[in-house]
Image (cartoon, rainbow, N blue to C red; front, side, top):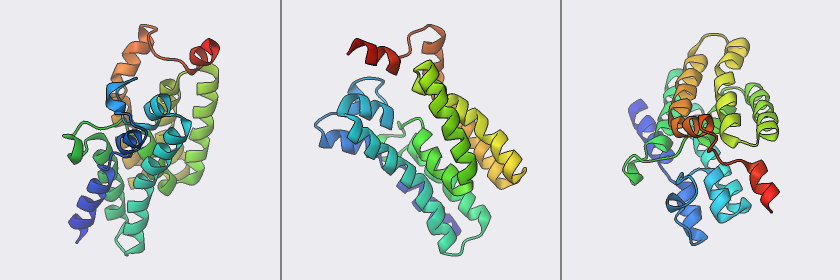
Length: 197
């Protein structure tokens, strides 16, 4: 039974909400912008409303499987594995031949379950970083890097901490191309976009 709910969590995580919402707007988000199915690229190509909806759905699929596992009475370790499975599902979705998103919004949902306070602190870091730098990727990377330290301070070095490290490392790995573009000053900036309007 434990394995079944973990598999179901992976399948839920695999649902490509960004791609589905983009298609509702008549766009295949994989063929434009960064080519990513996440909220940032959906917002860029299909508009802010679709981007916000993608963020909400992707975060929801990180949060709800963990809530469901807890509600059904599974032990904490199983709940943690459900969170990890959902996140892996978003990064490597079965339905898209394992070519998924970068995981930030789904991680947001997982982190919301683990520690709302830690998530709030990292969101504040994200907002200030994006406002100052103009780069969503920089905000995402710094917030992901900060999360394990905040969780360790608030929750200690238990299973929550290890799940957070696992997720944060994968977020950084999935942002490798963004890091390269940042180093070459080729990353797209929201500030530049606004200044061009």
